Each structure stands twice: as structure tokens, then as C-alpha cells.
Image (cartoon, rainbow, N blue to C red; front, side, top):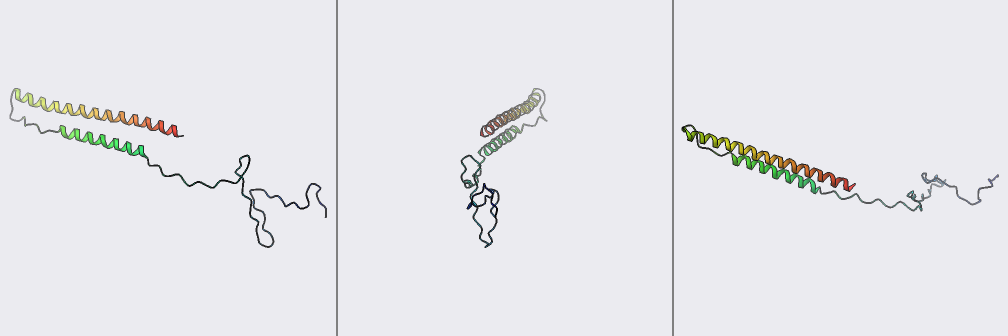
Amino acid sequence: MARNKHSKKNEAPHWPQWAPPPASPTGNQQQPEPQSSGIIGGGPIPPTTPPPKKRRRIFMWFFLAIQAIFIIWLVVGLTSAAQDFPECAGLTGDALDLCEAEEAGAGIGTTIGASLIIILWAVTDIILGITYAIIRLARR
């Protein structure tokens, strides 16, 4: 039998790490060697870690609580401004003018108050959005 001058007499055949060795004729397979992690120095691949715990989403609940507070504040503000004014139907002269001015002033005040609540709401949401973006970028 001709032998290659570079092969050794009792050396087992070298199989690539990605393929298991072929089955022996008796049916007993050899156990494959643990694969290396590809890092210099080799070693077995560490066992997989359990999946991370589900995040509680504290920021989302805080954001929703702020939204609920603003909605309640706006609804309470609008309903408390809807007062029953005395009928202006039987009034004349200065009394009639005063009654109509009171109704107009209440409507204007309600509009200004509701507008301030909505503006404050929008500014708060913008600040919370910027804060959320900064937190997300810091975690990357």
C-alpha cells in the first residue's frame, strides 16, 4: 500500500468542525467535539442565558398618568365654568348690559383657561418626548 510521506501512521482522519464524523460501520457514532466560540483561545461555547425579564415600562405608565391628569383637569375646568346665569329676558337698561357682559366674560374666561391648560399639556408632552428620546439614546 502506498503511503503519503506527510501522513502519520496512527493518525485519525481530521474532520472539519462544522461536520460530524461519518458513522462507523458498527452503528456507533463518535461524539463530536465541542465547537469553539471563534474567539482566539477557543473553548466551548457558553450556555445560552435565559431571556431577559420583561421590562415594566414605567415611563409609559407615567406618561399615561400625566395624560389622564390633564384630561381630568380640562373636563373639570370646562364643566365648572358652565354656570347657570340668571335669565336676562326680563331685564332692561344697565341690568341687561351687566347680565350680558357677565355671560360674555364667563365664556371668554373659560376659553382662556382651557387654552392655557391645552398649551401646558402640549409643552409637558414635548418635554416628556424629549426626555424619552434622550433615555432611549443613552441605553443604546
